[in-house]
Image: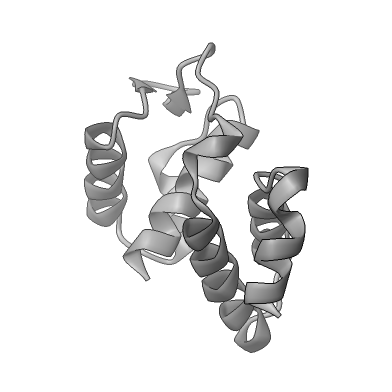
Length: 120
């Protein structure tokens, strides 16, 4: 589930201006230490994360960073969608539905049918 959490953290960071480590820990029901390890892993993957300390501080993705929709292969997107879909069958939450919708937004229109067939 670590990969799912890492992807979800990236999506949350892309969606929000800044979020605290405690908010992420509460959201994913893990410890602060786990969030710090996850942030380190995300940075090692090449996603530029900026941290700000103090009141109103937290983590954010550098302002000009964008994820190219072609960065994920058809197999990657299928695996992510299958994983998120299987979790959503067990847990009903708005955050999970939002994450699923965000991942679906990465599917280029020319590959939508191919990925839809794999996930279904």
